[in-house]
Image (cartoon, rainbow, N blue to C red; front, side, top):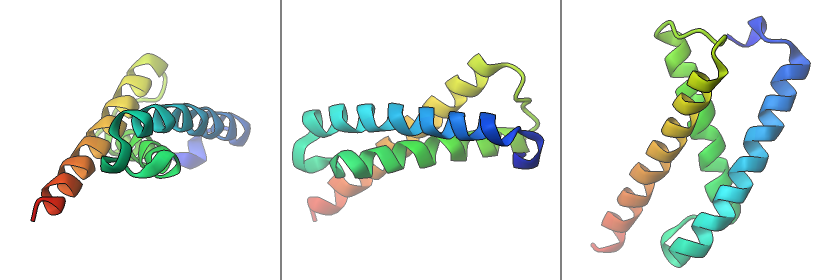
Length: 95
């Protein structure tokens, strides 16, 4: 997957996802307070979920030509990862 993408475009995409992740991380930290992972932790989870979902979708044969579909898949994966880990953290905190 990665050798097929121009390095400049890959760098711009990574920086854009990291910036969006930092904004969402700060917002989620303000909403969730101690139940979240902090603004930086939220941003790292967001970026990892985004790129993880894109890699999984790419392994199932999804092309990278339609950027709207790639973005939707990435955002869905990012919020799914964050939701699962937040639920896991909340469940462990109740024990």
